[in-house]
Amino acid sequence: MTMHISLTHLRLKSLWKIYPFYKYNSKVQQQIKSAEGVLSSEAKGTSFVSFYTKTSWKSKDDMLKFMRSGAHVIAMKESSQFALKVTTHGYSSEALPSWNESIQIINNKS
Image 1 (tube, rainbow, N blue to C red):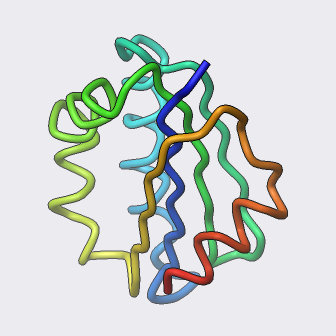
Image 2 (cartoon, one colour):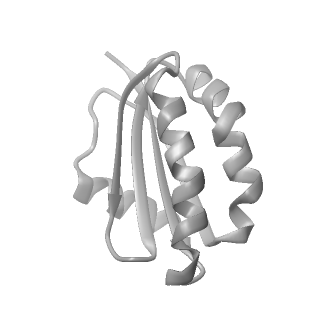
């Protein structure tokens, strides 16, 4: 089954920005639990200021609908408060990449 994979890397401006990041992130995590078309959602911090997400979707349209609504769209608009850089990459695949593959793919986009 072909799915849409969405990878994100967010780097905080500083450790002091972790509170506003978590404030928005917790709301986005609640939203994704009931998002239409989501197949899987994982998050990983690799340091106190570097965070990755890996989601899979039934379709790109499902991902775009989620991205452009609710807590996620608010977090995107407010991300300049706490994020130094946000990198995203989406593509179609038959398989979900491992975390090592995901981090390599998104870091090559930076």
